[in-house]
Image 1 (cartoon, rainbow, N blue to C red):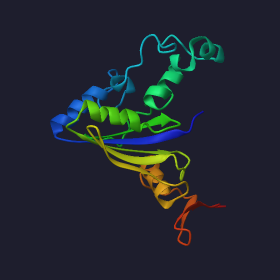
Image 2: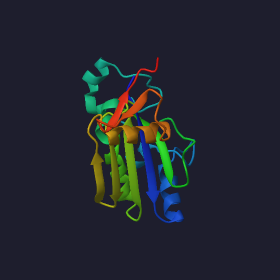
Image 3: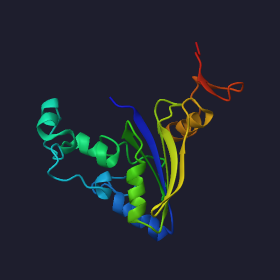
Length: 192
């Protein structure tokens, strides 16, 4: 199993612009409040494993087709994660904000591409690993072809913990974490 990454995407624009983006990225069979990476960068039909009748990919498939020509490898290369977005829709979603999960990594590159597709909106994107405090977290703001913000936090920093708490836990600090003022960060504690 992968580490699950909590993601948040906020679309800033007029109501009409926000709706246009939401309509564009939605899973057709689920509706607004979802994001389907295939809408931004479609996986080609020729990629082995892109068909719903393929249930798994094995080492021999990778050897036969090449790692970038099987679904998992292609997705990593073009989406930044091995699977499409999942755990959606999320009950925290609003008219302009989506929450979703990805496997192992955040997906700033595909969100940046979405900003190229919709140059009149600003996209605020953040992600954090389920391993609270991990350096696998960040905050971005994109506008057309500009990166307005690109922030990563050091592992075990106060900011890395707080971003993860915000994205994965609605801002609540789990009971097994306490803030250590001397170290200016959070640490795991035993609540026995």
